[in-house]
Image (cartoon, rainbow, N blue to C red; front, side):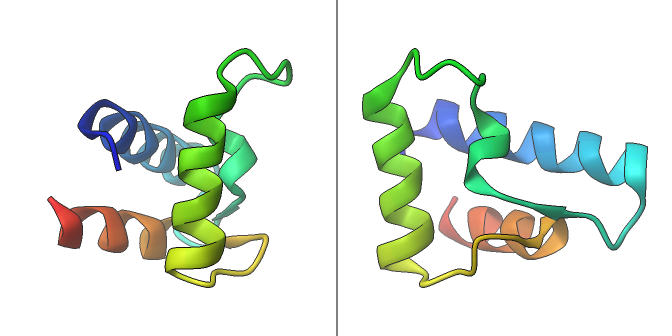
Length: 72
């Protein structure tokens, strides 16, 4: 996954945890605006989320952080 996208995902996950607590879940849609203004990046994250890691629609933010950090 593109490094700038990894950075964005980590920042959003940390923000969600700070706002809602350690048990917060996220969907890959959380990393994009409601308007599909970057379809290539959306497909990149969707492929990583669904095909590569076979994740459920909602996953714990801490799990996503761990997966991203393992790839860096």
